[in-house]
Structure formats: C-alpha cells, structure tokens
Image (tube, rainbow, N blue to C red; front, side, top):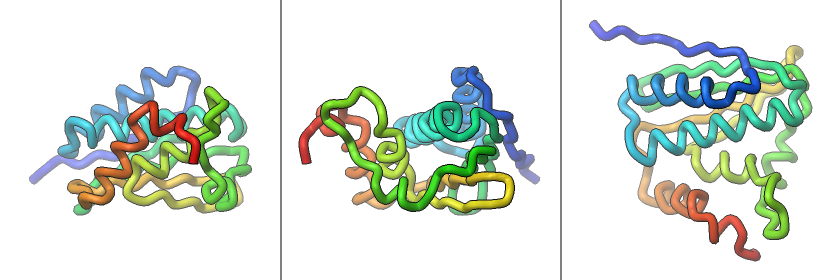
Length: 150
C-alpha cells in the first residue's frame, strides 16, 4: 500500500517555501530532472501572478493521479480569464509579464475555472510527456526564445 498525500499550502510571499513544498511533492510522485523543474517553475509563476494580480491570497493544492500531477492555484481576486490565457505572449522589450506564456509552455495542459471564491488555475503534468511537448517546454526554458521577436 502506498501512502498518497495532497499538498495544500496558503499562498504567501515566501516563494522559496512554496517551491520547496511543490518540489518535494513532485519528487515523491516520481518527477525528476527537467520535468520536476518545469513543475516548480510553472507553480512559481502562477503564485507570483496571484501575489501581483490575484488579490494576494489563495491556496496551492497539488495532487498526484495515475497520469501525473495536477496543481491548482486558487486566488481570491478572480480576475484571471480565458482571454488572459489566450493573449499570453512574450514582449521582447519587457523584463516581466510573460508568466502565463511560460506556464502554458511548461505544462501539458492548463485549465481555468471561475468560482464564487475566485479563479482556479489548473496546471497538469503527465508522468511522461509527448515528444512535441518536450520541444515546447525546452523553448520556454531558453532565454533567447523568450526574447525573440515573433
């Protein structure tokens, strides 16, 4: 019998603490190397967005399932919309503002739900990504691709 657990952590400005918890959860459930790094970076970007735009409060919830790991980032602001996700791009002149683009390129799937309590951004990671997904994530990690003009 394996011990499964769910990670629930309130969002706070202590991003290092949240990254450490998410990394521990991902490692416990079999993620390693770049795959684990992608999980940690995507969650860091999502939590940073909550701190900057989502009411500065919420919860990070991570769960493992038979296909991988899902992390939900709930915020009390409720301002994140599907239009934000669709419009996410890299501004080559900016040093900030491409978190949603990075998230969408590192995750296998990103979902968004609006509730009475705010927004819930779902970050889904499969245990083994498809080859095309690997190329997309590699592009998100390379600094020159983030600053290249479209």
